[in-house]
Amino acid sequence: MNSPVQFAAAEPEQLRQIAQDWLDRFNGALERADQSALEDLLAPDGYWRDLLAHQWDFRALKGPQDIASTLILEGRARGVRDFTLHPDYSAPKFMTRSGRRVLEVFVHFLTALGTGSGLVRLEKAQDGTYRAWGLMTSLQSLESFPEAIGKHRPERVKVKAEGENWLDRLEQDRNFDTEEPEALVVGAGHSGLMIAARLKAMGARTLVIESLPRVGDIWRNRYHTLQLHNEIDTIDFPYVSYPLTWPTYVPKDMYAAWMEFYALAMELPVWTSVSFLGAERDDVAGNWAVRLKMPDGAERIVRPKHVIMATGGVSGRKKIPQLPGLDQFAGTVAHSADVRPTDEYRGKRAIVVGTSTSGHDIALELHQRGCDVTMVQRSPTTVVNIDPANLIYALYKEGRPIDEIDVVAIANDFDATLASYREFARIVAEMDKDLLAGLERVGFRTHAGYMGGGYFANYIHRGGGYYLNVGASEYIVDGRIKLIQNERIAAYEPHGARLDDGSLLEADVVVLATGYHNQEVDIREYFGDEVADKVGTVWGWDEGGEIRRAWRPTGQEGLWIQLGGVPQSRTYSKLLALQIVAELRQLK
Image (tube, rainbow, N blue to C red):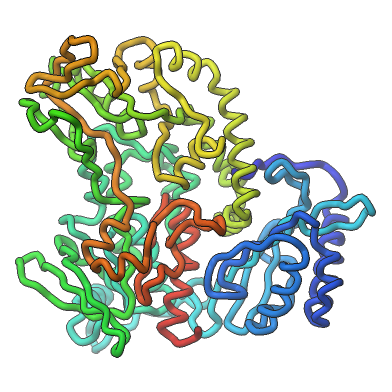
């Protein structure tokens, strides 16, 4: 995503002075509202990405004229001022970003509402001056409602009556018997827990509901040998980190236990075995009437002002394709989310439909359980070995504070993001060339990723279409896991799949590793067509280069979507919480 390559150029103090000189001129031009002077500080092809600092959305602009005029107009309206070198983050240094050599400068600034963090990427022009090729500004705190951390943490646990303790107060808070939650989070996976922790830290009464019996069951119930594919350095939750003894790749049951611990440690009111039945908006009262099915089967109404859908990392509801004749299959048909390979599969024959991550993982585990496995490829798949794949998170291995790295992670606009993805894809394709050649020899169709951006571009564009290889690819190459293309299957029959040459691919089990629907499906079911039409498409890049409806206004007042992998959920959950708290406390 962002290469960590550095250049040994000037001494640190010289670099600091270059950055400080640019900031002094930048501040002066803003104070004077001198558009011409501002334009001179910006590269002709430069960009500016703003996240809540100058307006209540995520937005990117290009070109000195548009950037300068908007900085002045919106900056004055929002009281954005006093850009300084960030006191808590790394000093200015030369880096390579999206193929360009830039002096990367972390900045701190003030707004009328609070404080912000940002990043300036200075590029040396032909005349020897430095101009900003990249500029990012983001609101990071609300002065009146700071996060309860550091100097703002409570001195003692507050209780309501003499003789009560922390556990008493925790139980009282989770009941919501005397007051309504201000925010309701639907889903207690990583996305839901993160936004709930952020909101609670900013003082918002927040309730989390989870349909499963325990926090973490979404991982606890998955197939037996599953491990996370992201390295532990990248998957910190807000405010805490993992034990230093934990492995680089966390097993799913360990991760499930962590999520349950996190909910307790962050004092999050979580109602488990509770189903979200639907909600109607009361525009006059400014809240939702949310219908919940409680563990005893009774229905309860809660009336939060905000509902945050966190029902999946990118998507939650299983996608079940209509395959010809599959309803006639006499064996077991199951979605990959419901398959738990055990020794009962030994000696059986399985067809796994789908060649993204779940398909590969299930096929590998079934084979290791003694099952005869054939994978069915329906579309080309981007394949990357797991170690090269995680180089995209190389920044997280540099020993810098994770909050600092998260600033870098949100600093690119769409063009800079895609350029960095393409460069990363080129590098890892060279590293993986032998693996890719082996896959292609056996007929596996590989893909360079959306717009040539590799697996991470696929993830942003569609939430799938890739596999981070942890062993299944070698099994495909050497034939231990067999492969056919979907076009060869004429129809499914009671005993397997009839192929185009008339032969029968016999099977006892068909596993549908066919992914999940986007959250827009949930929204239509739970909120109705009118709300769903306002929200529209969820996930993927929009015309402005931002991810559709994620962590930002959805088009429906009081309805928000929190999703993404752990790094995105952690980074953007703060920005989402700031928006919600600003509305709750009437700061907008």
